[in-house]
Length: 213
Image (tube, rainbow, N blue to C red):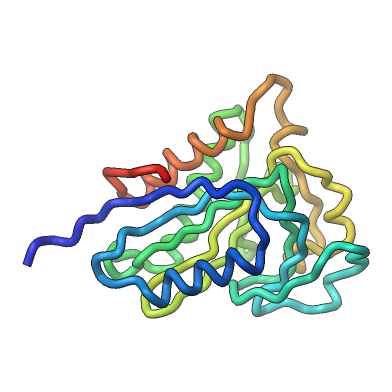
């Protein structure tokens, strides 16, 4: 039997509704085979609060007109909106021989290295997945694993209305939120950030070939 080709497809999907995207990830994961290439979906969501499986409904403080949607990912409540990069990692963990904890570490490392590219010093915090700058959270993580394959992923705040985060207790951590736009003084664009993030994700996860769709 020929060895499995460990390649990667990156899909740039633009602005997507949250619930429909989750359904698409579930269908992809349920139907994939041992030969299905891994994928990373890069996108933004319409404004939405999402509650993970560990969510406490009391952490949604004042949603106003923004929908609150239950999600099958891990974690608590978070916020998605344009101006935030979301990367969904649809990975066969068994094939890549990587556990969930190691995957989370690689995701956090990729985010830290991406921010370092723009001279922003970021860190992780024990017991609080995600990436932080001077104690404020700039990136959130959440995953779901089925049949040895994962989906969902990470979100990185780039240039959004941070005041909306005050309508929730982000991730149940009572933490302030920040974004890249407020941390750098020079011009950049979101496409550049996506490319740097993808480079670090691919390097950390050991992908040697990638095709973009």
